[in-house]
Image 1 (cartoon, rainbow, N blue to C red):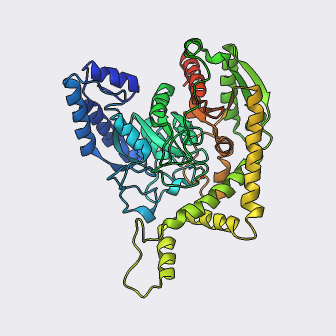
Image 2: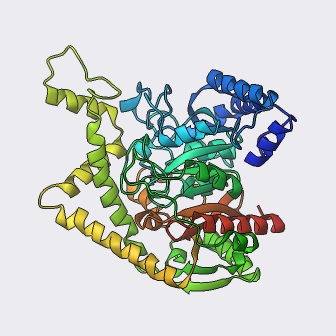
Image 3: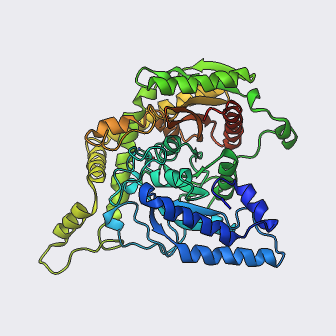
Length: 486
Ligand code: GLN
């Protein structure tokens, strides 16, 4: 049986009705990995034995008539910057090449409690810095739709794994778009949760005021299921928050039609710099949503253009502080021994050899932006502009319930297309960075194709209103399947 396209609920149903076993499900994913992984290169680590023994335990409990949770036996992949106890966690960097996690991230604890099964760890841009997976120190993951193209980044391995049928779902992290953009490039669903909705404990820190872990799935319903498990306040992450109490009554929820939402379409997200085909694909979808009876308003988010400079100052500054801990003493790669190196020279050598060029670029940029005399001119100013970006959204959400926009300016680009020009690469984040800066939840859902390549639509919601954007995402899925245009 082919389990690859089953939803989480379908897997659960099949298991409890004993149509198939968890072992069969997990084994079928490993068979798929064996078949396609040489081409896709989504995984950095695979954990077959432990996955199969966990699946057997699930099967045993089912055969004894015990109730098992919805995610029991469901196989998933984890971005290699999230700690899974006992497995390597490299963050895609040589500096952590030999590091093994000694504890589970909170999200992993929660998923394991539900008895979901880790298949392995997926490739990423080094320390999640990048938009194509080309900054990984280990391998280049390929886009399953076109192997000559990137899967997006930085959670490219996680998105490609789901798109290629190598995992039922995966976890990524989104600092400035790293779940949404690869999801869009690979034709899958990706959620960036509200800042604080999901614990960051056990996520290797890149930019702490922006980092969020989010699910990558085949469909919106699965994204909601995974999000509902991983969300919630965690005493190990002081920035995590209690989920917002439901504002709409359950009775209303049952009747709630997504077309009752008021939508905003920001004109800045459809500028000339955005690929014409992408603009047209997203516009067409918005038209169809309108035809379903939804109210659509053009809105303005005037500070959008400052998103990139601001994001790259703030994230690089925070990264320079967060990455100071990789000194060869506490984690990973060891400080070179033997020769008469002073401690300072040993640090230079270790960090010089251990970090790739993009990471070094950001450490230098961030250290500069935080240094005395420049802090006010760069970091502080960027924080103030961040406030303005957030105000744009606050203003918009007084008039509309959700914002619809493209995810990325182009579909998946070719390997090497942007590697010589870091600014070009940074600009590809222009449509995903603002929601990150404002701490808002945003969902990427496949909406069309440009040639053979998937194009996603982005739904940005009010803080804490993931349920609303899931509802809208489901409506978009219905429209797509009705039109059969993907
Ligand atoms: N592409 C962005 C960057 O390089 C976003 C990365 C992310 O969200 N982790 O910083």
